[in-house]
Image (cartoon, rainbow, N blue to C red; front, side, top):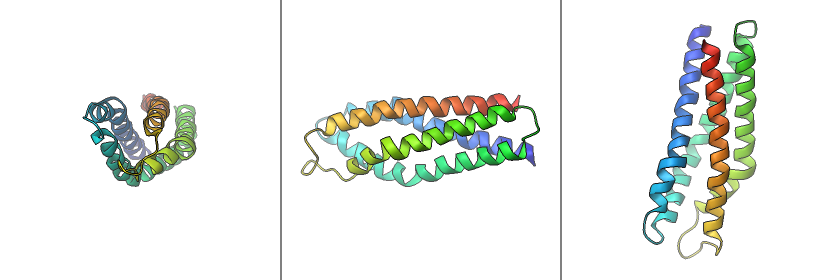
Length: 148
């Protein structure tokens, strides 16, 4: 049973990392290359879509990691799993405090109502997103290492 939990947790976190990596290094570059207001509108749509899904994915990943840490407490790699769970907690806190407020504003913007500093706000979101992606990659790496 513990082996199944380890695999499911690693796959769920790995897929989350893949999505967030894709947003950071592929989707944002595509959206930023679109003409005029199209990029911001794409960011707003992505914020609405992923903003509805990602909280469950982040909390689910954290919960699975915590369950693995508890269930495997006396097994090899438990410290790595605990550290990964701590990193996932950091990613959730970062999301709630730094990224979600910007995303919540951005997803309601249209060319008619967006603030003058909308580009700076999107750039700030992207910088924090790069940090968050680094944190969840580290968590994923620890989970994979704990499997060995």
